[in-house]
Image (tube, rainbow, N blue to C red; front, side, top):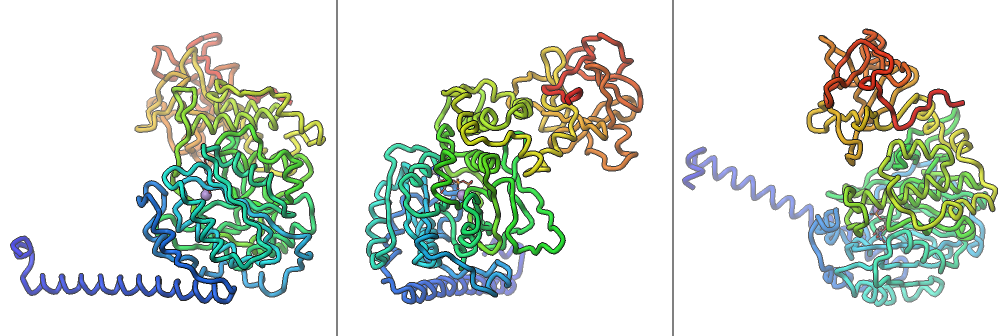
Length: 556
Ligand code: UDP
Ligand code: MN
């Protein structure tokens, strides 16, 4: 009271306390109502589908770990949300105006493979229950669950088996396969294992923190029925990891990747007359949720089995699909909610290289396999941007990686650039040089904390990668900062100019290995070691010789 009295009168203070209590009450009522509402919805839906309602709360009460940090989403809210909840309709209204034309179930049934590692019980259950209640029974052939060595919940799979037997036991047609890797094998291995045991016509790979929305399967089946070599992604609706709110995904995005082989969203261009909700081709899948013919998947060699743990597998599959006679489409009338987590919720096993984190090393290992198997001469682009990948050992020969390409008479990577991903090709064509910028044994580096330009060891794991742009002559970092010569010949990083005036002080020209600033005709120089200056251009001056990891000038 004393503290309060110091700042406000007792009457006012009382008012604040009452207001605070009312807010709390309103919050609790809303929270309980939505919980009850979801419970009612769940039991009605379960009754409608003719399955008994067992106490799922007892099942989730066994969740061993309860921190948000462990799962990278709001676990308490997930536990409170219920077994299944109503989801907003996020697809276009025209998706439901006609019934999809589906082949008979025997010709169009799906095996769903879910591999999970340390997933919260409530989240996994909601994924499974949403799938079983929102998928036409005749077309859902089987569910294959792979527990990839989850650490703190060793009874999860057995409990799940029991729970599902009780709740969905009446479904004669549904095959259930439960697998557990005693030792963690990684998502890639586990998905391949699941697919190798599947017996449906199609296989769908699903993450363990998803909620499928109404009518998700039919539009996918309809597309696949017309084209045996097609693979499809639903449009992923993002579920917020903190609030678990289900939002509408963006139909204007395609899946793609950059020259470092990192996944990126790309802008979709609508052709004239093309409607937003129509299926559209995509250079890569929308994340890791994808469906295709099981037979076609196996003939393509599954996810490349040399890839370790997690990462790169859907990019690898996308490239080989396109190059070996397949296509990828995203189907906006099919919606699946997915939690996009901000960080990995799992560790990567430690590897050989002390300078890289295990996650970085596994990513580089997997990307190097993709580059060596599929990128042909363009792999130099990858190595220029990821020089540390050169040090990563691979345990098998490159011939082995390339064998399937020859057997299946797959196109060269150039074909992918010309026909599938003009964005990637454009990025390549825009460049006249890229990668680290070396002067003797040091590299030009833009320090992260203050954007200061220094000369540093070329082996720093985050050493700056530069791009010399063919048209504008700008020399940019991937953060869109450009090397600029300003007042008093000061060299600095500034936001890359978009118009001609702004660009004038950022234009560079190549004189052999020298970099001449177009406006001043002076050359970049390192006369004193570790310090950049502008000085008169001198041929053969070692201090003015700057080499990029990859120079494209002069290529045909
Ligand atoms: N996963 C797995 N083993 C691993 C790593 C991940 O089975 O070693 C599972 C994970 O539980 C999830 C799926 O693989 O169901 C995809 O992983 P994640 O969701 O982390 O990938 P993202 O969605 O971020 O691409
Ligand atoms: Mn995921």
